[in-house]
Image (cartoon, rainbow, N blue to C red; front, side):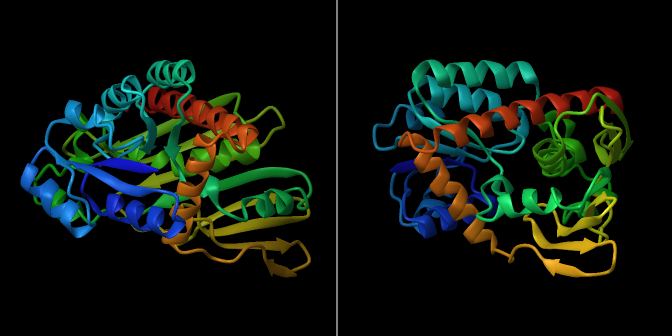
Length: 322
């Protein structure tokens, strides 16, 4: 299947590499607002069909799908355009900025028989079921700590008084929108939806949230503490605690460094580490399989979790005043 791309950043390079590794997707078109940039990016990846007109690429018969990696605020507009033109959509996180937008796009895709998927590679991890199995063996879960704190490469520019895109509220950026889903997905996937949410954000001079903490409370008296930061580098990782042991995760974004540690001190590695390319290849392969009508139950599950994560993200956004 041939696909087009929106965006020419490193994440698009990584997605193309993953899709090539999977072998089921081939780059068929490139879009950038700057045609010269689109041409240079296309040449790097062996693609000659380049566009600076988004509507023209959406109507291009040479592709059947699109990978969207534009600024957060533009996701709804771009997804809607390509779904209207009959293209399957794989969109970078966050899928959209509100539950209403998610619902509208999901219904549009369903009506047209199209696949509409958030690009969340941890959900396509080849061994993700092993983590669920390990969680079932740590007894009664009471507490979870999920963290994604990564000092932004644009932080020096921010400190100098600039306004890099990832700290620009007009583009829907900030710690919650850029990073929250990496903790919300495992929270929803492993623990379900909370009944109460408490949240507080810290803001940088642009008005964007640079760091955020929230507490998710569940009916079962489980407490999940989530911390996000673009202004500091975290090293502690994440952990889900039960009365018989804990599951420890060094880097939740890629489910890397995952261990089962029992209360008696024994420990075992649950899954091996996968490269980003391998994870994005698994994501691309699942996307192709969903389009082919395979793994229907899994696709419905992915849509349900995406819907709940979008709702949770909005809930936290309201509580934190972001």
